[in-house]
Picture 1 (cartoon, rainbow, N blue to C red):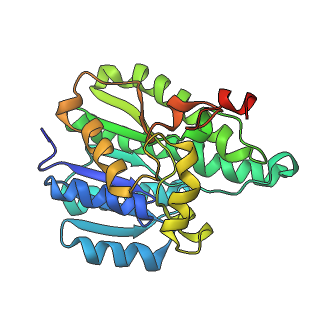
Picture 2 (picture 1 turned 120 degrees about the vertical axis):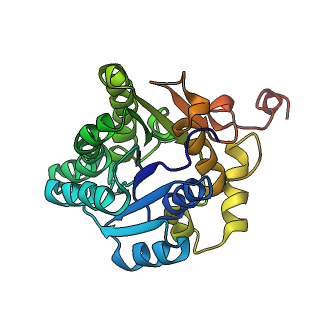
Length: 262
């Protein structure tokens, strides 16, 4: 993809399945990547797999000192920052019973942390003549989901953050977009399904036109496109990478009207 070679990206949540796939795709395109993640074991292993174009720094995005250290590490190791991918998130969510502390935790990671990462990277991106940002929203931010409040609400807010940031940073030649995955073979779905991808695909089939979950690499390609110069006239947009989930609606992929005559 145009313009990625030689660029430097910070990928928060880079130790997750999707985050590592994004880092890998960027490196394949010729970028250098700083993986910023709170998971020390998985982050270090991901950087080892990705080779010399990757660095890992343990990073808690709810801590401004950690964020500053991540930016400094990217600058020291690779010379600057061109791209930000805000993939880090928490799935803490007890729906209507969620406590004030849980609300604060979810919003701090899923929304405020992303904003603080962008704020810290903005001066470095401006020094290099601009850059690009991809935030992770979700199909969960567009539809009501039973028993879930914190994650969907934080992801809906992330979409508005993307639009506002795109407007305010355009003068610095910084484009800001988001990607909205459907059910994807992610760290959380791997955990919830007990590592059974066939089962996860079976459950996802009713909700996605393509009849399966997405793969991390498929989401990563959309992220790379949005960061690349191929998307030079794209900003403030939310790109669905959801296998048709958002096109289907509540009736799912089956013929609902025929249930009246069954």
